[in-house]
Length: 138
Image (cartoon, rainbow, N blue to C red; front, side, top):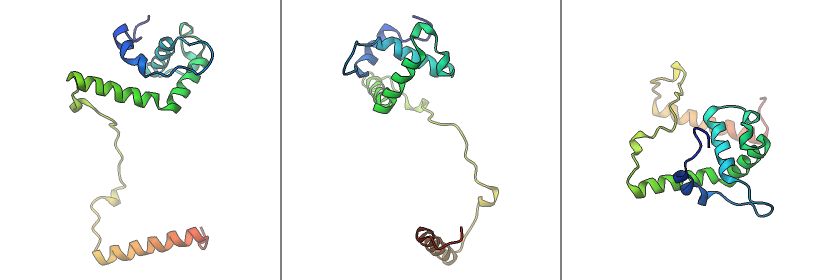
């Protein structure tokens, strides 16, 4: 086990939420899970996944399968539920995204008279209808 790999206690919580393949040998899911987590922890390209985790393409294929099946979302929800059941959840510490989306400075504080706003909304609706019918020059 390398630094950053899941511990035995963590694995006991994670393993039941990972699907097994329908055929073939059962893969070392823990090793593949650790490889996926290593890749996202480091931000490295898939081809740079250390060889002790196995073939990078196998790890990538496993990640794509899990992502497509919603395994990571289900796992996250299960871990939040487990922490909530233990009373270990402090959602005050959650930050989904800290980026900023700025509007153009001309959009800040614009006031439109109610009658004018209705005219603009009608014009937009008409324009959308014309575009759908292919009657504009754009």
